[in-house]
Image 1 (cartoon, rainbow, N blue to C red):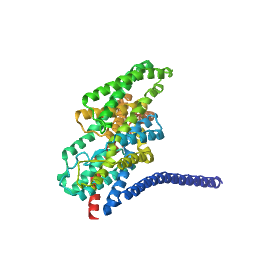
Image 2: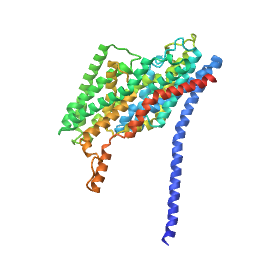
Image 3: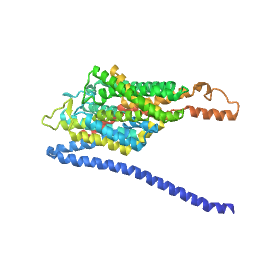
Length: 498
């Protein structure tokens, strides 16, 4: 009798589960279709507008339209993948919501691309190939189109796999592969390639060391003393001043380098002035904030780092827009330049305004449509962040670039930012688990089942960095250049046979 009573209930429960599953699938498909549809509309609009403007090129207008569409596709993927490195820590630290982070990044990325992106760009992807006399103009057009398309495809795949990768390495790999397919291996600048390979190690290691050192300083000087409020009064304004000086130099050397080229002395003076002004303004600001915080708890004092973190993330986005917009529009500008009065291959070309708009708007649109996935990975899934930890990630990105640039070391901003997040997590494992080696289960048998259960839980608590992201992201970094190069060579071969 009991079985006959349970059967209808089980049937109703199963029906509800099936209905819930179906509803989840519909919502998931809708979330995918809407962004993809809007991206398709953006690319179609590019094709329509560019096609109408270059009809005078007879049959060659199709190459310009294809390059413009692929450039827009590349910009979408840069926004979806690369911008997460700047805004992810702020979201993970619960300082910004995903929506506010996307809004700030979209404005700053667009401003950086349009105001400081520069009107001239290197077309040969940072000297990875030397095409002078080695390829014809037609082969060069196909080469750059293949490189751009391959880089965009690889970044799209990496985004789907939740792996933040370097867009610069992607486009360099694309140019490398297409260049080899076009004119052989002698076309490659192997000095530049060796520098790129070195950056796979230098960038994340530098980023991790600097961010861990900053966090350790904050722990020792601010959160370990008994009177944390007094420690904050002394140290937080100083840290803000250091951040202001670092970002002043960073913007002078990287963010504004295409519109302002200061000397070394000017950069030092500019940074010193930023340090003094920031320290002078931060002291009363922090003092007022601390007066409103009555407790001595760490969580209440974390919010002192919120405003500096937001400003730092915004400046990083501005500099990213100024620098990486060339990854989307550089090859496009190179192709367009070959249709002018002088149909020759130039090492540097001017970028028309419409190409800059395609790059700037594409990056912002890609961030808004597809960016939340990678923002969540960088900010929340690698390790747990809070406001001071996220602040260390942002500051370490600027400091690491400055150190590497001064020493002449090749670095990737993507690898630096993600490496900084890993550095924060591994420092937490070391400082919060001093007896990790002794307590690690497996070294000895547990006396009771309760001891074994507690030891297992303790091990889970100690792993403060998700190892699967360490290996998957590192693997994506290593194969970025060969993967994009292989795709570009394949695409170039196919296009040449058409």
